[in-house]
Image (cartoon, rainbow, N blue to C red):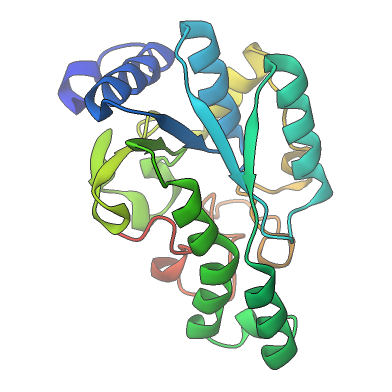
Length: 231
């Protein structure tokens, strides 16, 4: 698949990856939307290509206000239905009662525990009944994503397909596509953010840093995944 689309324009390449992935999955497929520029671009590409794609989002309880603004803008522009999933409130209550509000900054294990409650468990519910899911991951983003494939089998989630239509895009191309198509854009990007997750775990980055340097900035680069995309 990577070879077949390598020479196509990037938006056409992404659309072809989506089509092929959905056809291969042979059942319902949805985009895991964090309202990043990547996910907004995928929604627009699918819309322009007439590709039917479900959309779901994980509301961790700690998203930025600016992220919700993008969600509303997408609903208005594309008449989207976004299926929202939230953490089990009992698990969040127990975590905050016993560990405090910022335990995720103490150790990698505690951060994984928080991500497990707020992201991984809700994702498992979001993926039930799906034959595949779509992500906005790009190879350029970090060392943990350098071996991405356009279409993969997700062994962590029952072997369903995982489709990565933007894997070959770089950041400049992503920003250009966003500007040319006047897509909704999270206001945090103009404040130096280049990857946006939960508010306490994300900050702006410095010139020369990679796009995910602002995510869990107190950790080593090889650990900067939340558990949704462990490889």
